[in-house]
Length: 165
Length: 295
Image (cartoon, rainbow over all chains, first blue to last red; front, side, top):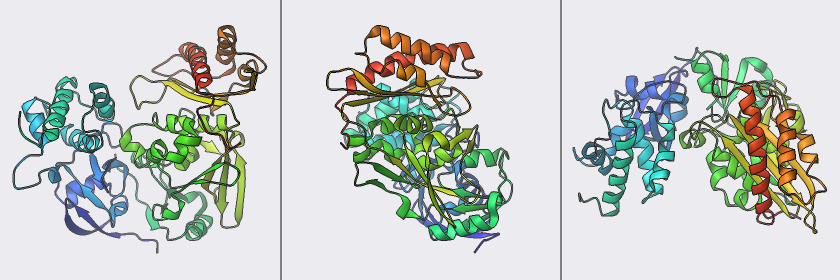
């Protein structure tokens, strides 16, 4: 059937949600306005800035370049889902705080989700690999130096079993 | 910005998708990865009345070897898969190499090869690569199917040979001839940006080391992916040395038709084409024998 409205059932950060939406609702707006998960930021809405990056079935993707109905039956993780237990930050988040990997913080959720997937695949990356992996996320504050240091720090800590050095 | 309102349909079968497309024609668009379509919709450069989402047609997500050594790639294969698929790596490393230059990993996780081709952006990498490889593209509609050669597929800026009831369902990459080397090089301001200039080289040597076949194609060099046939022909019959490389680069510089843009003037684009041609052919030569052909 060709629908005017679409019922979406999706899992976000492990919890099921069902909402009735217009098909044109961007997934980024669905997360923010329908589910109240405002950690996912919206910058350019054409796939350039990377602020809206989420994990879609485990892979980092732009939530501004998908429609909400496309999430039906799929699993999403947003920056809110990085905190595994209680209020303990993910090692990446701790490293960003400790290494001053953010200033205004607008780009940070997208960078964290991108780097989460990157570190899962490249546990001990070189600086060049980190910089290339960051190329799809714009940051206008930091000049990237401290972001690279934060990711390096996170990789070291995760390899060491999550302990702070 | 936000897209204009549209109706949305999740296709359950390919026949279902094609029947709906036949009924709605140009008012409807297929939605695969959407990584070019959705930005265009967000800017309201595109306002389709109906989107036919084909992402559930997972039987079109295949990379397959066919009997004659050719590789077939289905409509739902994402660019990221091309970077990782062992069959592509073994037989068609040019496609893998180029895939790594398509936008950013987050975009490649979603965007499909066939969507990229149907979008027909001349600045995009894979159209030039398919042209260099002599690929064929299979389209299907409710009333039948046909094969289109890559050189006939790209008609003009963002325009392909597809009719409004057709879907690009499959790409076939012919087996490379024995002793063939390939290379894709581009120069962009940042990784993931559109290239200021990009070149794909496919070079085949005879048993005595002379070049028996050469193909050179360019992205962001005109209204469609551009083949520099005179430059390529200048290499054939030669035991390729530095002077042949320079001559081919000089011919390519004249043969392409870039328009210049904010990042690179037309003259700079032509200069880059000459320089990158030399590098790409040199590296393709060093790759001869490393790619497994079908023959």
